[in-house]
Length: 430
Image (cartoon, rainbow, N blue to C red; front, side, top):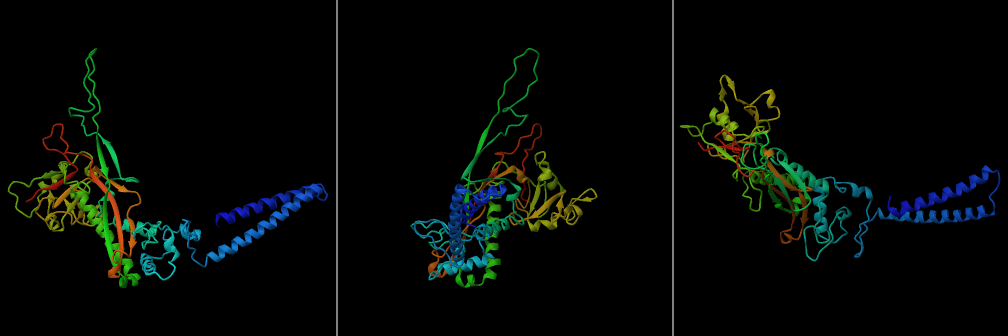
C-alpha cells in the first residue's frame, strides 16, 4: 500500500469515528441530534464521501500501474513499482540466468526495459558507465551478488579463518602492542625493595594502517550464451567465484603488499624449519613435523591447520611416533577434514602449497594471527553491453575489495629458548 492511499484511509477512518461518536452520544441520551450536532454530522458525512471518492480514484490508478511499467520523468528520481517486488532480494528474478537474459534484451533497445531492472538502478551519468541502468548497465539484485560471495568462501578458502573486519570506508588503522613480558620494553614488573623508588614503565604501541585493494573479475558473455539461461546459471557465478577465491587465498599467503594484501609468508613474521641433516629429497620425516609444531606460539596449536601439496600426501603414510601413526587419513576425529589429520590437526590439500620437496610444500598456519579488511557488502556486481558492443557480448564484472597482513611484524623471540616462534611455518626444501 502506498503512502497516499494509506493517508486517505486513515483520514476517512478518523472522520467515520467522529461521526459515530456524535450518533452514539445522542442515542445514549435517547434523543435526536441537536442543531449543532446535526451540522457537524453533515460536515463529517461530506468529508467521508469526498475521501471515499479520492480513495476510489487512487485504487483505480494503482491497479492500472500494476499492468504497465511506470517510467520516471527526467526530474523525478523515483520508480513506481509494487512494494513487494522492491523487498524481494532477487528483485523478482528466479535465477541469475533469467536476470542476464533480461539484461541482454534491455541492452538491445526498441522496447521498454523490464521494470525489475529499474529497481536500484543508478542515475545515469554523462558517459556509458557500467553501474547505471539508463546507460546500459544494471545492478545485479542483492541476493545474486551475495550468492557469489558465499561461493567464493567455500572449499579451501582462508578468509573465514582470519580475524576479519568489515568496513564501509576505504581503510582502517589498528593499534597494537608486540612487547613481551620478558622483553626490555613495554609494561614491565620489577621486584621492589622496601622504601625504594619504583621503576616506572609505559606501554609501547605501534599502528598498522590497512587500505582496501580491488580484486576484479571481468567476464564477457556472448549473446548466444545468454540465450541459454540454464547453462549460464551454472557457468558464470561458479567461474567468477573460483577466481575470486583463488586470488584471495594466494594473496593472503604470498601477497607482496603492493596493490594487494601482505602475505603471511611474505614478511618477517614467518619461519622456515630446515630439513634434517642428510635427509633425502622428496621425503618427510617425523622430526620435520614435530619441529614445525614446536615453532608455534603457545595457544596456536589447537587453532592451526596443515596446508599440504597433494604430491606430499603419500610421504605421510607410514609416519609413526613409536607404535602410533601420526597421520590418520580416516578416523572418527577426522570427520571434519576430508584428508585426515596430522598430529591431530586437520589437513587441507592445497594448490597454493609449493611443489613437493620445495620450501613450503608443507605449511602449518594459525590464521587467527592474520588480520583482513573487507568492504562491507562483499562482492559488488555490475554489467555493461557497451564494453564489447562490437563483439555482440555483454560484460559481467565482479569486484571484491580486501586487504590483509600478519598481526605481528616479526617472529616472536622466546624468553629462554633459542628458536623464534611464529603462527606461519613452512618446511624447508629437501
